[in-house]
Image 1 (spheres, rainbow, N blue to C red):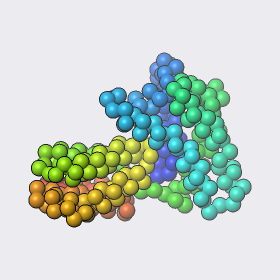
Image 2: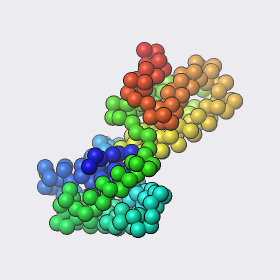
Image 3: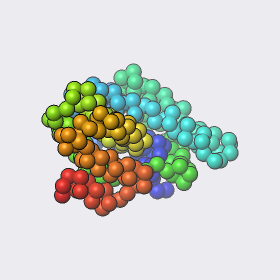
Length: 254
C-alpha cells in the first residue's frame, strides 16, 4: 500500500516507524526516554524549551487528531470503528511519552514484543491514512520546499530585528514570524494547518494601518507582502517545488 503524509494517521505511522528504525540500529535507544528520542529525530538541539514542548506536543496530539479525522470520514460507523480498533494502544504509548518513559515502553503499549513494523496498530494506521488521503488530504510540502520556506522566514526575522521600527510593531512582527518558524519546523509531525494558521495571523498583523505604514517606511512592507503571498498560494494550492522556488527567488531578489 502506498503511504501518505497528508493526514495525521500517515504522519503518526511514519513517526513510529522512524523511531523504531533508529532504535533497531542502537539498542540503547530503546531505554532512552521517548521524549528525548523524539527530539533527536526532530533534530532539536535542546537550546529552546519552547521548541521542545512544541515538537513533543505535536507528536502526542497525533492520535487524537487521527480519531477526530476518522470520525469525520463519510463512511459508516462500523467502518470507522474498524479503522480505529488499535488506536487505543498508540494513545497509551503517547501518554508514556509525556511521563518521560522509555521508548521501549511506548512501543510495547501497542506492539507485541515491541515489534512496531509488524504490529496491528501500524497496519491500522495505514488503512486510516489511505482513507484520509482519499477523502480529506491536506496540503503537503516537500522537504526541499520546507527548507526554502524556513530560510525565507529566517531572513525576514533578521531584517525585522535590524529595522528601525516602533517597539510594539517590531515585537508583534517578530512574535508572528517566530510562530511561523515554529510551525514550519513542526510540519513533519503537525502537518501544514498550523503553518497556515500562523500565516493567517501574520497577514492580519501586517494589514493593520500603523504596522503597514511603519513597514513601508523601512522598506519591508513589500518584501513581507510578497513572502505572505508566496506561502499562502503554496498552502492553498499545493504548489510544486518549481513554482515555490520561483516565488521565493523573486522575494529574495533572485
